[in-house]
Length: 220
Image (cartoon, rainbow, N blue to C red; front, side, top):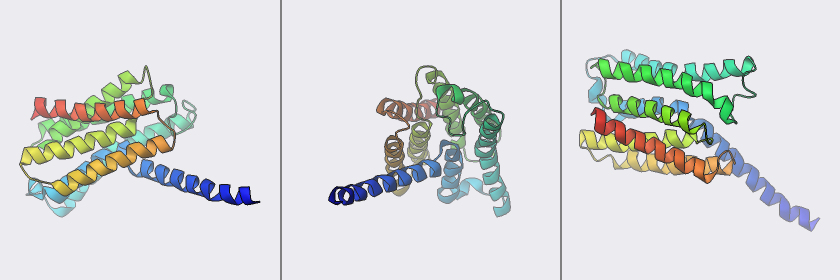
């Protein structure tokens, strides 16, 4: 009885930790990263949206979410319902191939729009270029190992927030600190849930950061 009582709190703590890790993973799913970055620009660089109404700005935010989150997620759902994948969680490398390609298409389209329309923040050019490059790297790496999409996503947005501060020459210490904090939190959560190895996490993180750096110095 004493042994059971001593084990029980440990078991509860592990379950709670695992629950929190899963919640963090869902909240910071890589498909939400473009939407989060757009919200960041709306909050801290609202002057870039001068000349458009608040309603138009909300429509643009919805458009980013629709194209970079909803449609790729819907594609994954269809693959699952059509029995091309065992679950919507994409636990194997084979299940990730088509979602990578679908996401790559939408990121390329967003890159095209950001490069050819001037009525939006200039930094979206390098950001969408960077995440498009990251999906290409992810697809290639997926042939060898299950690189972490979450790590690529949070690494990419953290790098993008830092580079955006450089571009506008402002000291956004709070957003940068929060981005780095959540990058560490998400990577830790993926390790806690045992979805990835340390190699897969660090490789994804490195890929996300490097792709944003390359995009910034080639596009801007």
